[in-house]
Image 1 (cartoon, rainbow, N blue to C red):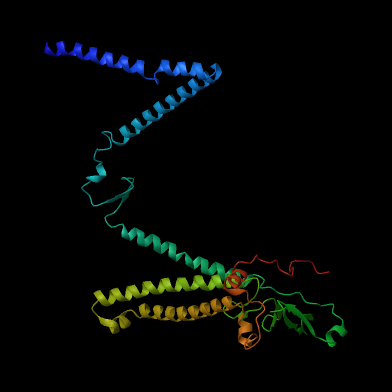
Image 2 (cartoon, rainbow, N blue to C red):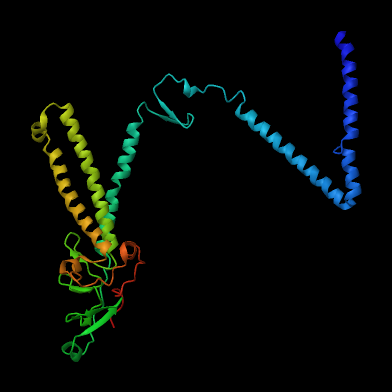
Length: 331
């Protein structure tokens, strides 16, 4: 009864204050409309009212969407415990229970990485076949050369970056060889930008297959390092858990030491050869030029473009088409 007697007084005072605020405020609906009528034309007033309605609708939509998101993230379903969280087994779960692994998923990771790394053998074999079967940059012969051109003067020179280079005449191919070219005695061809003849793949290394040769060496080196690391791991485990010592491992499992010994030699050979070619790339020389000391002393290398320029020229040039069409018909 007391509350009932107090409420009418509160309502009366609140109503009076509200009426006073509405009369004094200039931001009420009537005040806003009056201002719009006095200062804004009719068409503009309608546009403003529509814009206001659109903004209010957008505000309401955003608020409703936010409330739904909060209810979804903080609802009663999100606080429930999942079955995989209290599962009594020793399984390991990932992605909220979607992936179920055994108690030790490290074996899966090791096997997966081993399969991925073992696929290097395909990269090694692929690069080796690609290098050994493509045209290294064979220069066409001049079979129709006259006797005067062969017997006569064989002096010719060109200027490259202000440095004069003499072109040598090849008696076998009957051509003036371009700069950095050489006649391979094994293949019996003049090869453009001749580097060397590789006996391991039985092919010349020249302008067109040099970067693939580097890829072959890099992939082979990585594969050898991978196998060598696992061999060392196996030897370490035998020494640690076998209790037979190094001589015992050598006696009982000789292949365990034979394979890493062979791989160690391969790693040393491939690592040294790859390091030498990286050095040649940085100074923009071929192995043949470095062996002949073409640019030693006061002689300037006209092909040197700086470290970045040399790397870009050797490793990232567009692959040139073969200068000899070996499948063409003989005329």
